[in-house]
Amino acid sequence: KGGSVEGHAPREQWSGQLGFVLAAIGSAVGLGNIWRFPGVAYENGGGAFLIPYLVALLTAGIPILLLDYSIGHRFRGSAPTAFRRLHRRAEPLGWFQVGVSCVIILYYTVIIAWSASYLVFSFTRAWGDDPGAFLETEYLQATKPGISLDVVPQVLVPLVLVWVVTIAILALGVQKGVERANKVFIPLLLVMFLGLVIRAVTLDGAMDGLNAFFTPDWSALSDPGVWIAAYSQIFFSLSIAFGIMITYSSYLKRRANLTSTGFVVGFANSSFELLAGIGVFAALGFMAFQTGVDVSEVENIAGVTLAFVAFPQIISMMPGGPVFGVLFFGSLTLAGLTSLLSILQVVSAAVQEKLGITPRQAALRIGGVAAVLSIALFSTTTALFLLDTMDKYINEVGVVGSAVVMTLVLGLVLRRLGEQRAHLNDRPGLRLGAWWSVLVGVVAPAVLAFMLVQGIRSLLG
Ligand code: PHE
Image (cartoon, rainbow, N blue to C red; front, top):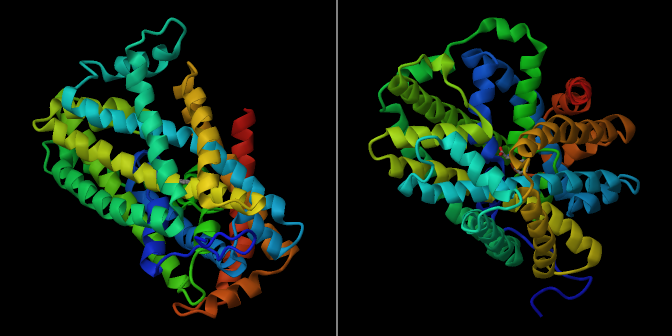
């Protein structure tokens, strides 16, 4: 009963194309769009960064996204299963992607939990006059021995809540859980985020912020570091080479449109990213204006400190701050949750297939273990430092490494790109020319290998 007869469970499916597209956008649009992209673009040439960024999207981002789709859809399995069906010795590649996903899950949940608590703090301005100091006491000191008991609930409750919500959604399965959640969360995210951006650009000083963001520094184009930053932003942001898109596309119906969908998802994600750049820098311009400094002197323009130090300051300075806070932290929470669901599904699908268990059993087991680990991780005194470092290396080494191996194995070792392209072209939608195989099999691995070497270097140095 319930379609889960052992060994013969019919594979779960999206109810239709829309469910898949929303879930795929939900995965792509995450913390990386809101807090990573604006700072990366600003520091790597501003307006000029858009050129390497677009090149990276078109030469590697969308082509590899389509490779992920073609693998998941053709071999209809989680990452390890799909790679095993591709070639009996390729399964470890899938497990490597599952491993990378596990690491991300641990820190991603912690950040979502912080966002959720800051949503509440927006009303009380619990961060007081110095959000930086608040962040430290709240989240770092709180976990040192001798911690005062009233801080624990503030920190732990949201984390437990995030876990309860995600485990519940995951347990309901692909269509009733993940798809339905995205159908609610994504439109809501869009409305909230548009509201945020509109408010931000109407603030005093917003134009200075936007000028700082968009003013091109053309010399950046000759700096290889800038190109690496563009490719690595695209990879993380599109959630490619993590096994996510393999897993998600494995739930598509046979006749689904793959290629056009990939372009839609790719451009939707980048549009959201640009919008985030505008919203964040308009708000930073306002902060500069209020404090009477130049935008270029504003600190904390990315990551943990952008969200939990700079934004609280902005919210405190602003008339109607709590509403702005709800829009910002609400967006961050929703964007994070929909991405988290996608990475959890990678692990869940792999474990379901390996152990022959149901989505519900998998959700409870994985969720249980991951919840304990993420709580433990969060309880280290170096949590903040760890987050930033993990974020960096997961990107520069984990994801890039997995993408290099995947493209090299498919293109050079197994020579299977032609088949995968035929699979994509067999369906309705855009048709890919031979250029796709060249991009995926030659250009992408070359660029990626260079990035990997740089990434490992910076890891060692
Ligand atoms: N694409 C997400 C973002 O931009 C990040 C992400 C990566 C999410 C991997 C899930 C898995 O934030």
